[in-house]
Image (cartoon, rainbow, N blue to C red; front, side, top):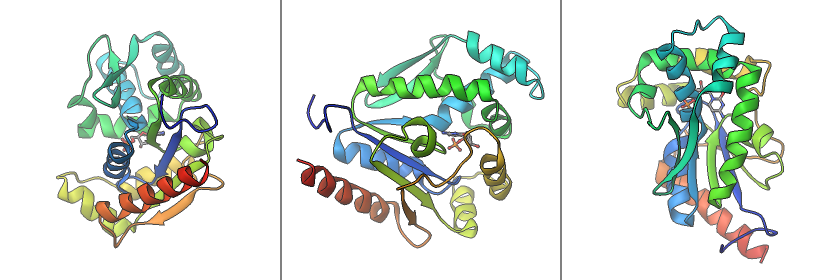
Length: 221
Ligand code: DC
């Protein structure tokens, strides 16, 4: 496999607040560098959807953790995008509904869930070099990686971006829930490069990351 770093797959950790442009930029960076793209938020969303489907009460941590231990969820590489299939199905539409979005932070706060996700997310490295987006990738999932970025933008700008996608949601509330949970909260990982892209296009943001990555990999030989 080309482009290994010290014999290991390269992992670019891309963390940040909601609607800070993680997905758009992660996809652009993955495409430019030829890495596979992993959306960890989609994995938590899939579990939240599965809990709703199975009628698991969201205030029942034990039941959520137990369902997570038992569900038949399997990673697949679809054209460079790693996806978690549930019983052989990828719930692409279902995980983006308002109902699922509202349920995710609760599900994502359960320690047993985060333990399961960490194992699955680390296992993604078997597909090759990764651009992995999330909230705790640099701080918790791949703390050993040298390549960490943290995206943010003003609340105003992020609300505008969500509204442009036709989604009206309380971003400040979700950031707060993601940042204040006890288990692997959203935080800026040590050594992460922080990029405030309030006044930047995705093209500009991703170019910054792509160029820096190319320079660093070249310097490392
Ligand atoms: O990035 P997103 O909006 O699809 O994430 C959905 C939710 O999942 C978000 O509220 C926080 C949670 N999440 C998380 O706790 N850890 C991650 N690595 C990714 C997402």
